[in-house]
Image (cartoon, rainbow, N blue to C red; front, side, top):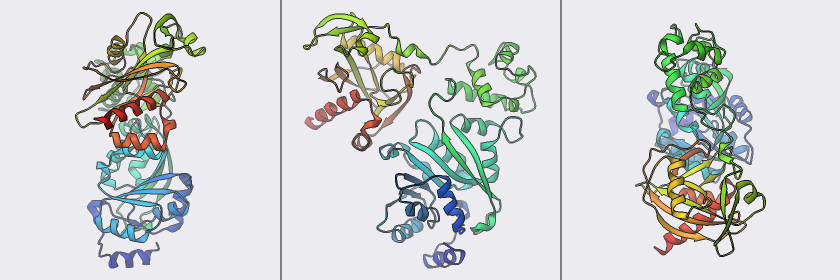
Amino acid sequence: MKLSEIDRTLREIRVTPVKTLGQNFLHDQNLARWVIQQAGVSADDFVLEIGPGLGALTAPALDAGARVLAIEKDARLVNFLREQFAGRALEVVHLDALEFEVAKLFPHGPVKLLGNLPYYISTPLLLRFLQQPTPIVLAVLMLQKEVAVRLSAGPRSRDYGVLSLVVQSQCRVEFLRTVPASVFLPRPEVDSAFVRLRPRAPNELAAHDRARLLALVRRGFSQRRKQLGKLLKDEVADWPRAAAEIDASPQARAEELSLEQWIALANFDQLPVAGREGTDGAEAFAIVDELDCVIGSAPRSEVHGNNLRHRAIHIFLFNSAGELLLQKRSPWKDRHPLLWDSSAAGHVGAGEEYDATAARELREELGVTAELSLVGKLRASEETGQEFIQLYRGRHEGPFQPARVEIDAVEFFAPGVIARWTKERPGDFAPGFLACWRIHQCGEGRA
């Protein structure tokens, strides 16, 4: 909309911009089209827009052919948007974006995020929507310029700090351009800026314990001018050796270390958190006949290489809300890397039985124990990778300690979300899970 149109529309729908909601309406149409170009929005895309306002970005996104889900907190603007874009591929949700369940986006596939984020909640919104696991593959966002500069800052700059590293450890950040206050009605008191964020690939950075990384970063920046050797003496006992190992000066301060050096520091003197151990080709599996009777054993590599019949277990863990825990398989798995799978799953080893394997896999993969009950059994087939699978069910609220050699991420999902997701995007899941999900649904239906 042009400036005059915005002013007239606000009067017609009796909306006075609310400063506490960060309501500043964009009236530069060229800038709106530029945003859509920077996000590469096309007819193949599903777009999530936060704070659509009067639809400055919504309109060009729809014109590009995308499906758009817009989250708007102001009920008056929700009604306007629904009327303005009636009959088009737009769904408007009346909600505070901080309360939106990101997990509901997974059935839509890769999502592009757009928005003119309210300045007062821009950081928590970023961390909520881009925290792994996330279906968002790209975000182009307008933020307060000061925040945009901090997000994209590099080492040895005054703007580089905890926020920079927290976000950059999850995403690659590009500062795109400054936006003057004059393109908004009403004019904000500060300039804005656009940033583009792309979530990092699972194996893009060295594997590390994220909690330890963030603890070190926060401690290191607690006194910016103080040397890290003094600040981290309780966390890193042999600082001179650590500094040498990460190629840093013994007198280094927090702002001098790159993200990669911070990760190396988090890994200093720690046990490896990931590697090829998750695909040990020599691990011995029980080999069975067409009736699931054990006839011998063979190494993993031979079993998978020759498609020999063998045994496996899958476990569905539910919380008190009835949500199912799914795991995203690690990039080091020899089969179906980075696909979503059952809460825990594993092969029955030589000399082992199904029940014992289920208890063991639960401990090894998630670091918990739970009472398990048998749901059903699947025959070996091409879909299951020639595995006879026994499916178990249990309950646990967490917290979990996922084995990084096995699992990239874990997340609880409502069964309704999973049902829609498996229907719309079955390729996001390991085939064995899809088979288990079907027998679970059949069991639920009989109940």
